[in-house]
Length: 254
Ligand code: BTN
Image (cartoon, rainbow, N blue to C red; front, side, top):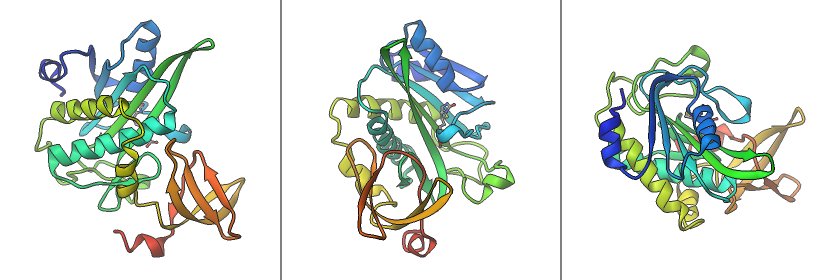
């Protein structure tokens, strides 16, 4: 259970809403922003019953994870903030746990080849007026209660443990701090993003209009888009979506 007093002492300047269980902290933070939440305010939950992921997917959110949604008053593109969050969470995990994770374009962190963190940044509008953004982060910290369809692709930082060897509040505060400080110097984090992104420099494939397309991942743009070279030599920018590193190439980085 997140100790709200402990977390508040680590980030005294922000308002917090902490739940044992909620449907989705992104949904809660969005409603709060519409009511007047401030930059840096934070929603957390011990578990989510309707965790939201990218591309309309769900995000499995049992106890053992850190589920947080940060209110950001920013005009930066969602893709840029997503890459910042990836770098921020990577740094915070390294600081709290001494674990080095890899970034999988665009919004996943992997450890030992499996997803341990997902990020969902969503813009919030009131009519035509942009109110800001919700940066939603789910870190699988301990336990291994993944359903069979996820067991091959997702895990946690400590799959064999039933507690975290560090305070969840410390990890949350560290993520909060890294994101807010990084937001002030965008896109300085991109060098670190590129260094740790295992998708770059790899043969990849993705699906488009029901077709599998093979390509080579050249680089990440500052707005988070992926620059790719197709087999016919043409270069394209993928603004969003999901790509897979071809298994042969993946073996070299696992
Ligand atoms: C993804 O991997 O597709 C993104 C997953 C983002 C999950 C986090 S958990 C906290 C926040 N609340 C949500 O409903 N989603 C985000």
